[in-house]
Length: 56
Image 1 (tube, rainbow, N blue to C red):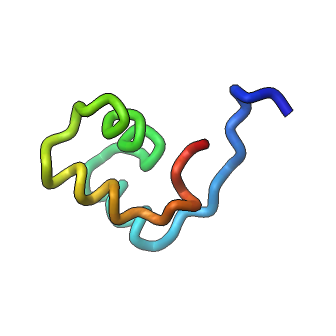
Image 2: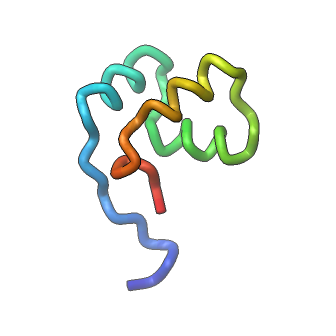
């Protein structure tokens, strides 16, 4: 499988609630976190998501 292909991840209820609260997908939030674009509260929210929902 090519590296660029993302495998769909199962989102937890917490992931879905975070997405609804901030208006962005978990994938987008992880991208922003990895680039240090989030403030401290949003970073902590992303860190609380399940490791299985983090894109590889």
